[in-house]
Length: 338
Image 1 (cartoon, rainbow, N blue to C red):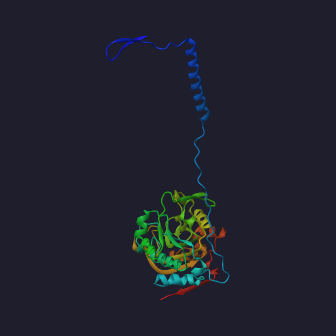
Image 2: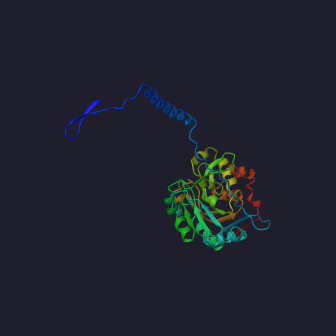
Image 3: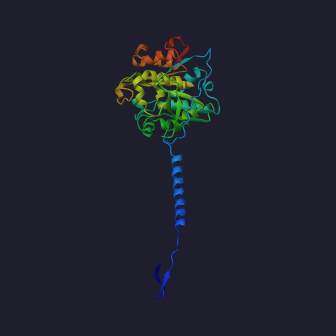
């Protein structure tokens, strides 16, 4: 019992409730039981296993190929100084753009835009080639034409300085620069490449046209059509250089494009793949088109003074059934435009 004072200052007694021993023990038991229950619940909900995350789906490549022809040329070589008519001549020799593109298709163009270089330095695909192919696709009724690459240097600078962004947009194409969330885990099905992040734009396209450039490469001798597929990959792709010839063939076996148009208008003869000096560039004014990337790459070795024996990925590609190293055995047509 305690005493307190009211507002008038008078003192009165406050009586505290009396708790018997039996009530105290009962309340103590209730409290202890509740505590034990919460402890047991915590133990039951605890797991030594890590928190599981939703697994990212693994995607598979579409088939971008067209039906082969038994009569049309398999390789078209065009020489000249005006890129647009050269592209039209090359594609026309193979059966025309309508053979490769259907109305309503979403068409992805894959030039080499790896480096922060100007067109004259020949480290990237000639922007005039990109524009000419984009116009052809639009004329064929493509719903959309996309131009993309996974650049080595800063992508925005690469696309602007190469001239490819302005050329593509001027021809009615849309430039897509992949960001961090634009890569999907993809089953590459290769000897070396298994599951790898790939730019999602390749999975969303209906047709894919490869637009590589002929260049010297310090590691594998050359970068041509098959090597150009490094530009579909995210992740630490430089680690693939440990087995570069196998990785090149794995990539070519996975993508299998609808059409390839090789840019040999300006050729980086040495100090590739980045280049930099105009003294390393030769004007060759040539385009090579076809569906056999092995043969196209083998044909282009002459620009770099290489033999097929010096480029192991060609023989590996032929062993995988990707094409023929001996391009002379293909049906081909060569043209010279004014």
